[in-house]
Image (cartoon, rainbow, N blue to C red):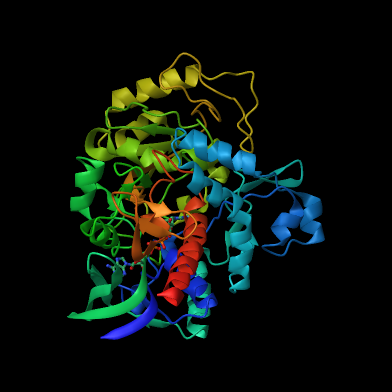
Length: 494
Ligand SMILES: Cc1cc2nc3c(=O)[nH]c(=O)nc-3n(C[C@H](O)[C@H](O)[C@H](O)COP(=O)(O)OP(=O)(O)OC[C@H]3O[C@@H](n4cnc5c(N)ncnc54)[C@H](O)[C@@H]3O)c2cc1C
């Protein structure tokens, strides 16, 4: 049996930030990771690494990364003011995001980036995915000009180095299975360490061990029928253990338990994420084409907004289609605009020189239905509006259902390329209810549970139905830092 002041369960971004934050308060910290050292890092390690924080001016960006004078002179970074951030989060979550939690998320988002930098994390301007050249100037769009160097894997590596430099002990191959709780206070966890049951005692426990996205039984139970059929974009270790063990002692569930973040993902991707491919099985450039189901029909407004504001919801829409797939179809006018994930080796792609030929190659699709859809789509596009991929250009369809609101161009320039996708789940939205200042978990009667804290995907109440890209890592770091500090303060006075 071992004893610590603060025990952090998990080793993704939220857990690493919790551990570093607790350590700042001068207490003895340890971490438990269900995965081996080779597979450590949770979903954070699979993440693309884009991070959404509030900024208004170049000096805000300079707090986080180096920006040269030449870059300043030749770039339009746009803004993501706190008002814009609130607007995006609230319109996407149908105004359900918890006001206290979202205020913390948004108002602390820039400071947390600067804090991460002090922990050794390096950031870069997000040239690859969120910018384009307009009249010789690089215009950043989607309000997200910065990403972690090396993506999510880089972020985890930097934080891992920081944790090791502080001498924080890490137990790998150690899966927490239940909380040690005497009805009054949590004082550690029971865990399976390299196949053997053990108890690890601590004055405070921080659960930062992800949602239930990798558990088909829980997905079906909470998200609904069909969700057992999806692919998992990231870690296979997020089995909902933390949520289960907290609910078992009476913790309050909070947030959108029937909701999740899920995207269009290669139809033939493996069951779980592959770190060597990272997030590249995703296919996020659908805004420039059309999505086609087995009946040959469109089923969403592909151009409702930038992909950052629709992608997390459209995976669920693909899942609702017959046989749970959709083909993304493009013509050669937009090939150069397709993101890097359209150029990897492992993908389900067909090409053709005519639409008729393409129709025969779209496996599982009614060819006549597809050709009819494309004819009607091509005829419905407003001709007097200029296409511009760096703004919501208003180049829309008229008179067809569903409408395409922006970036609608006729499919008329061969060769045509099509990519088959299914639903890939990223993470689940349901979580626990916390006290916002400390990250302490509340019980179902809304009283704090002594000794129990949580962070990351396990915090409920922020995301409902949809999600603005780049928010998961930022919220994980913010609520990780808060929970680490809360747990450490409590341990000191215990
Ligand atoms: C493919 C992909 C791309 C993404 N891209 C982005 C992006 O660009 N920007 C962004 O902001 N977000 C992105 N996300 C979302 C982001 O990764 C998550 O929101 C974030 O990583 C969650 O962090 P976390 O620390 O809560 O969980 P995780 O990073 O998943 O960490 C959970 C940890 O708990 C461990 N664990 C689980 N159960 C147990 C147990 N019983 N005992 C001990 N340990 C346990 C896991 O092994 C893991 O170490 C992406 C996610 C995926 C999958």
